[in-house]
Length: 301
Image 1 (tube, rainbow, N blue to C red):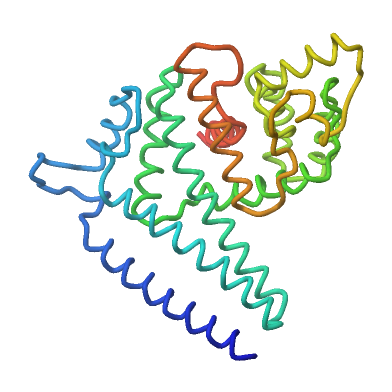
Image 2: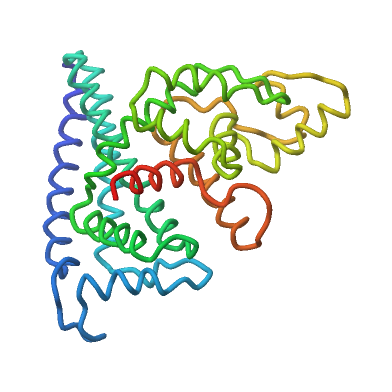
């Protein structure tokens, strides 16, 4: 290990100490799983969940959420970055490859925990779903806020990560949008829950549209526009690199396997879906992740 690497190790050690201090400070805040007589009134897990279900006003809900939820989210992001740095540093100093992979896997799993928080809030807000199942997601969200981990996402994260990895191997033909069939072939070799989801839900318009957004890395509106352009020009299909030229705008269709790419593109699809739902516009009103986690939950009810 050279001097620069030794200095990086010290920096990471300091960061780990900082994380420990943060964790202890957050733990001092009232538990979300217990009853507390707070200045704003009596708070119990049940009242918190009912508030999440009933308070569905438009706009950002950050200031309506418990302080522990917001603090924990920041802690999770800091921890995620630290584990990612540890993975890169272990590779740099030629530590066993298995160690680097385990550290990065932990960072990716934490990213999915961050994503799960968004998904639960989306599903809780869906008034078309039964109140009881929305309560289930509410209690799952409390557990996630309290412990920054979730049993359901521990199972789902590897599946979604595998699907994301498989997506990189696909070469969908934009225009005909023949990419779903390739995904089906890959899905045959994957987890039974994902295969069940594909078999049972892909026929639903919202799910298939969300799947296309996930596969092609462009929005439902851009997919529709691209189809119209190619049909008008009499072009059967184009490659990924040509999409931006036809749409006349920058398109990030070459996202890598970095967990930050996954989350960034997820948030774009999430925000687009929320806007369509709010404005009652055509296209998917949920992300592929929303639909999949909803499916897994319903299968286990």
